[in-house]
Image (tube, rainbow over all chains, first blue to last red):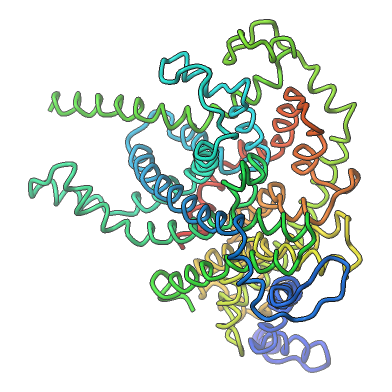
Length: 313
Length: 282
């Protein structure tokens, strides 16, 4: 009986201060807010507050080291008088559209190949994922050297294979070639994310569906079209939404490879915002350029919350 | 049946052959980087040399130059310090938030969850200008501590989101039975949930480490003096002076600056694969 008595005593609320504190921390209404407070402080101080500041800057004539006052939407409107901004706006859509399209097509192809019976499965996956984990700024330096105007290994190979006429294009010095170079590096760096995520989607498709389709006489193409693609839709939607926002807001690749040149032909919002906001000191205008990223972000978040994560929050 | 097996075999060969262009695309830049870093300047700038091979013997001169004639070691130390502190801070904060989101019901929990998800999607390039002002006000301008403080802005949402998925897979009953036996919630979290969620924690640490090591735009904006910058910034800014580039040392820097990530990657490849898909698919 004594043993039983002790057990009852431990399970029941203890008397004394420690007992009461313990009990307090067991309440979800107390522990929950306590646990989220550190994260909340970081998000409020370093995300929400800077966002409010971005809005203020964008609506003011802020200039580094000078008092500023509100000028309404003038920054957003004046930007349209700038050739650099109009070019950037166009670049952002061209860059994102082409890069994401390539990543989708190549990503699905690569995922289908990775889903086959392979001999060195782990090694191949490791190799495929590598561009995604290496610091982008550093790997882009490698690409910068590969596109060098005098020693380009891309051109050397192209000429050796007879695809290019010597000396080959000056990749980073000509408008369209520079855009092609920037897109190539973005696809190179983003492809692993597409391939590995789509592969996870492929693995999750039940084998029975393919067997049933095969029994009904469906060939490889129609199995892909009527079984694989419809079941991949969810994963594809998430990957495309994710990639759209991060491609649209890309900074590293353009900054290292072209600095936005030649003549602004590869500038994206982030690189132009930095140039205007920091290098020339017009913070108000720079913040306004950054905020042009915001509608796309809102659209992606809305789509994610509305269509993709129906059950979560 | 034999015909079917043979067909399978040839299909397997074909899959490997079709993978070759993808593998060349993925790996060639690294090969070329490493190759350039090991070439003598004479061969490097010889326009008649074959750029795909080393013919005149490898050399470590670019590496020794990088290590002893530049501040590369200081930059690496900075990167390590920033990365380790930001990772530790973010994983702890993220674990607490993730547990609250996955398990506890309290006022405002669902709006907090949405907030975390939205900040998870906010790109760093959206807020770096005003954040630079916040950093100034905190008295951290041109200091590596600015990065320790600001990296959690993208690491905490990431860790929280990732860990929440892992915590949800732990059956509630295990935790409840521990609490019936007299453990408090915090004890149940420490002794039951966290040990089960170790793979998730490893993933969170790996990704937080990788994301902070690779971060560029904040590091470039908030720090500038040679004593405070990270390795990515040091290599891309300090090694490039004027119009004359030292390609050998530049590539040596790109190789060495990637080493910590490559080491982690080799040992924890499977975690990278599972973490990548967990972040997006769950």
